[in-house]
Length: 251
Image (cartoon, rainbow, N blue to C red):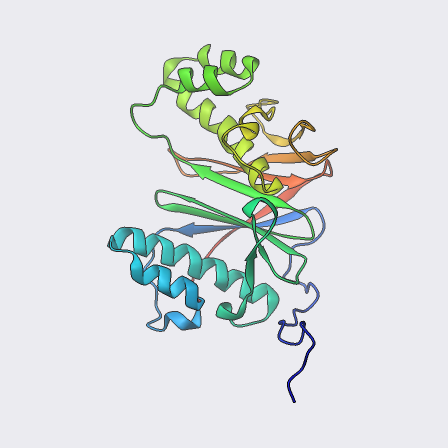
């Protein structure tokens, strides 16, 4: 007999175990992009849609980067949820934000160049962003045009050799908040106050109700990254936040 229950085919995910992120903690996975994947069976990791998208990619480098981050994403989430990676049910939530269907586990994925970062939390919205500067860009002019006035002055008053790093630190903080909220970076996201303590970035709390959900508050942490990269993590709410940094390796 065929069931009429629309939830009958939903995967049953366990409650958080000892390996899952606890309250006030984000697990942050570093992904080296690309890696040589050890499997010849993409269906073990990727969904059918992801396999079809991979097959359409003509550039081998682009294909390798995409496949690496998607395999890493599904591998990590599958470990937390105790299901095979290809059975993790991903969907698009509010504002186009990716999420896991029927689970309070939250995640955010970002990659730039040869570095990927995956943040995972339990029942707390999270965003992560990693960037590396593009050569030849006028970061002072970009800051003056798009950032709040005080932040534009901060970037332009810095030594020219430091402007790219300061600009990207502010940018990754804003982008992390935007991704946590499921919003859009170009426009409202650029106006998020993100300066705070540039030196530390340790638990900076920002609040911008003009574009977030009413009362939207985000706690920002800068994330250690290799030379030439900037990265930031944002979690919903003003509660203290810390992260545990791990390196992903395919099992």
